[in-house]
Image (cartoon, rainbow, N blue to C red; front, top):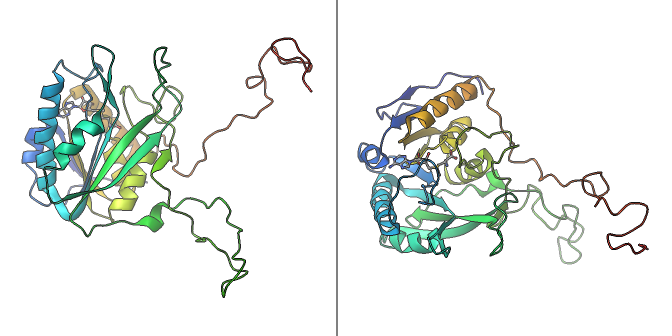
Length: 308
Ligand SMILES: C[S@@+](CC[C@H](N)C(=O)[O-])C[C@H]1O[C@@H](n2cnc3c(N)ncnc32)[C@H](O)[C@@H]1O
């Protein structure tokens, strides 16, 4: 992508990006009713990240309720809201999956319909000693109204058996599955943005462009407005503009706003590091120096017995 993007702190429907440094609730109140096709966000989880201030779980939920109400107001009929969340861990170490607490808030809005609870599975993270290590987050996807944009063909993935043929009936001998690919399903395996990921910035909690891109391609059309109230490193906005959509959002931390401007400049120059959505997950070769256990050489197993 090499083109100049119009960026402004004040919303105008002609902006490619509306970027506000400040609180999202104030920002959302400045957006017109029914202006956004999609709200896609990952809110701060209140889990002690460096960008979070101390608040009780109840305060966190109350704030989310106010943000969600504004997001419903600005979303068009036929648009969507997507909330990507993980777990809150309380001070006793008990796990609270945030979607369980947020779904009742979305359900207060009769015009919203839950369409999918998408599981985002990734392989890197903390190694837990007292429970199984967490390796997924969820995305709650709600449509506003019964009719909504869903471009399935734009996000299809390769079939498992593309060469499979129908073996009976009038279609016998012809491909039995859709030649342009299959529905990606509601479990998405996409590498998370950790140290060696091409997209890693100084932000501690980015999601990958591929995740935002999948949602945006499926739920919006060109020039539609995509809003993220908690921009972070602006992955949602970047995925939107990269695909010819308009973007708007707020970020409260001025350091991250500087980072956002830098990423948008790189995007405009066609230089933003990006892990393509279609790149398969890396599987290390089975017999490399790193994948073979050091003790498993010369046919000997770890416990000293001969292997077959
Ligand atoms: C989980 S991060 C979002 C990361 C983003 N999805 C990305 O991929 O870059 C949440 C962000 O919300 C910001 N934030 C927290 N409270 C906010 C508020 N009231 N208004 C706007 N931004 C806020 C934090 O500074 C943090 O950068």
